[in-house]
Length: 79
Image (cartoon, rainbow, N blue to C red; front, side):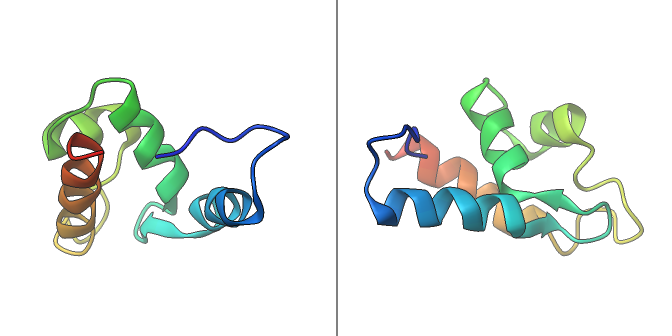
């Protein structure tokens, strides 16, 4: 959950690139970057992230991504 700017080191840049490429919700192809953005904008529960992004509304109904999303929420709260 680091802010990326032109002066960031390679690790931050690599994290930002991976966040854009990593699909947290595979059913709906929603990136980790989009999930993190929703969390930064106040979505502090799985249901709020679901409403903001559509994650968890695919064919598995969140069985695959809810654990990951909840971990991202906790990581943000603890940062």
